[in-house]
Amino acid sequence: MPYSASTTVSTPLQPSATSSTVRARRDRAGWLRFSPAQPLFRARAAQRLAVLAFHGVTDPRSFAAQLDRLRRFATPVSLQAVEQSVAEGRPLPPRSVLITFDDTDRTVLTHALPALVARRIPAAAFVIAELIGTDQPFWWHEAAFLARHGGRARLLPTGDPARVLALLKALPDPDRRRSLHELRVSATRRSPHQEQLDPDDLRTLRDADVAIGNHTLGHPSLSRCDDATVHAEITGAHLALERWLGEAPSAFAYPDGGYDPRADSVLRQLGYRVGFLSDHRLGPRLPAHPLRISRLQVEATTSTRRFDTILSGLEPALQRWRGATA
Ligand SMILES: [Zn+2]
Image 1 (cartoon, rainbow, N blue to C red):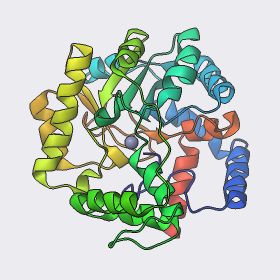
Image 2: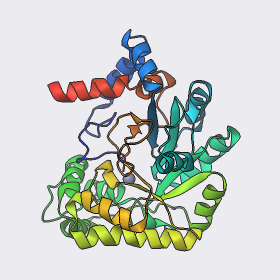
Image 3: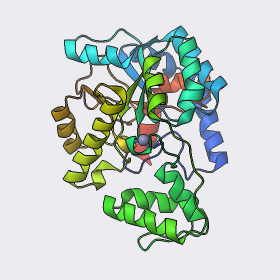
Image 4: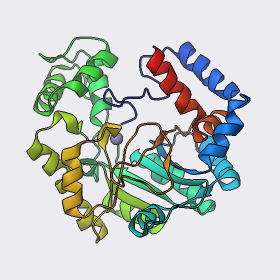
């Protein structure tokens, strides 16, 4: 899910921001590239690991421009290389960048994959197992649609889809599921279908050097789930992926990007080698906590100017500073 109430750092574009605010932020971030701090941050970033967390790729040209930038100024590495570095206790090369996708809608197959293959850049895609082979929309898209079309639930406010979503994510998981059901039966329209990847697509991605990782069964906020649900969400997705791919997944991305110690223990039992957060930070070239590897939030539509300042860590540092002083 692109946006989260549980992440400690605000993501680049908040859902509540107006389009003019968003544009102003984008412009400011673009100009950051000329800040005297940018060369310092870039030099520091060369000694860090940048794991980029994308979602869908709606603008293939913009995404291709970002990849070209990485080819010129960074060292794209595979998930396997990160896992190997952890296993051997050997830091990755300077300027290492790993590309990841969360939720993994069909645009990762149709738009991102050709651009990655053309440049021989590996990546990793974290999928929501319950959706594979279905035409169900992501639940947060569905909830926003239903709220816009008269959907009501006892525990949720009416109207503003952004508020409905924020509250829905904060509810204990059984209440979230029940509220989603109430929205479905009360809305005047059904949410449009969304064709998802199927098991063949997962194998196509895997065979083209896009490793497939676990992003739970149904993408709940793990911090809102009881112990049994945390276990079932991770293990259920693990078994499904193993069945589809013929091998057990070894990488996990926390839904909403938030670390959960109970998930950590389930992942250890299942033999996972790496786990990824969405904390909008660079990390060490030898991850100190392999099941808590930092990632930078990036969109495929991000301009290359802004992309540079995210990759250097300057934009994330400013975001944290703004968050701390707000
Ligand atoms: Zn997600």
